[in-house]
Length: 269
Ligand code: HEM
Image 1 (cartoon, rainbow, N blue to C red):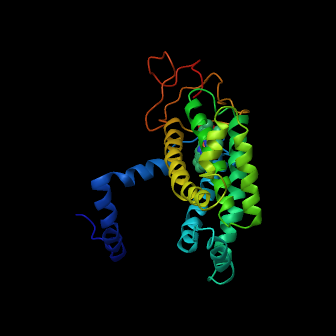
Image 2 (image 1 turned 180 degrees about the vertical axis):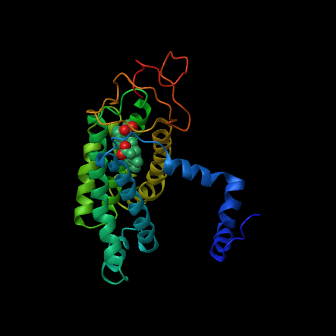
Image 3 (image 1 turned 45 degrees about the horizontal axis):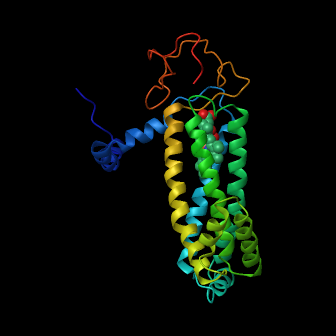
């Protein structure tokens, strides 16, 4: 006869009702479990945390940016005073603004460190070339995010740094003049420029970044992460042992291969 459940077990069952409800209808919990408990190389090390650190910095930027957007006023007459209000009068406004301002540098530094790790580990090699290309796009968008955010306080530094930035863009061959006209939004840096930079900074670029990060992480889960270069299973090396564990959402197949996983002499994925 089945043992009667204890009180805490019954309580646990009740608490899990919403989780089961969601899983039955969406499969999201199973997906999350797959993500958290998937196989990674046994010699994964601290360098592999740089991608997640970059992601954390991006999330901090998004959250603090949303709070700032509640109070920031994107017009030349009010931008500077709204920033002053956030910094000096708003409860913990100085903290949120400071986190967003310094966090921007942290984000870019982590991005380069992560990219350096990927490069030194040879993780851009087959079959991860597409993820490298997505990464390059992420890098460009992240730099543009920094550039467009710099103008928003509308102080002397912001204004003149943007003048220099836009003039630099104008020197690019062919596209330069169009690019600088597009960014300036008129003959001079003014209301139009600020609106453009604000819209790019808080709508288009973050939207693009979120989309690309989603694709980037999908490919990380699908392909698995690379072992360090000193490992027997480093990217690009011949595989020596038979792999039985499933490593991605879908087992990736090398080019021109019948699809049987783990055969000796197969390039390492
Ligand atoms: C917003 C920016 C980025 C985020 C949030 C991000 C996030 C991640 C995460 C969480 C991983 C898995 C863990 C790890 O390997 O660290 C990863 C892997 C990877 N990332 Fe990024 N990344 C970003 C930018 C870049 C850039 C700029 C590049 C290169 C140009 C890049 C190329 C790759 C590649 C090729 C992998 C696979 C690494 C492997 O298999 O070992 N990522 N990324």
